[in-house]
Length: 148
Image (tube, rainbow, N blue to C red; front, side, top):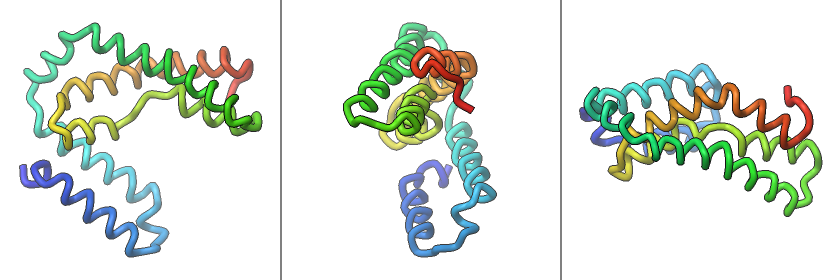
């Protein structure tokens, strides 16, 4: 409970440590992956099954989330790449970033803002699962190629 209650403090401490040290260990995946896992676990421990059940009962919001993630964001990415006269490789990167789900950061910011964290987690879960099919499809449709 202390960890989740003081999450902003722990974020500031972690940011300070990351800035104060230039160790290649702190920037490595060996540290990053467990850190994100601990963060997600601490947020998960602060929620109840009833909150998740309530979040699943909002199919319109889940559908809107999927539409924004896989409908609007890729279109905005293509528009941004075109507006900035990006090279083909830059365009591929921008479209790739615009075609994937939001990830865990939205869950953290929902927690910090006092939002519906369970709904955020369910939205992340649904777009992550949908992204397995949607992202390659969108990349092929938007770039006319397969990105590997």
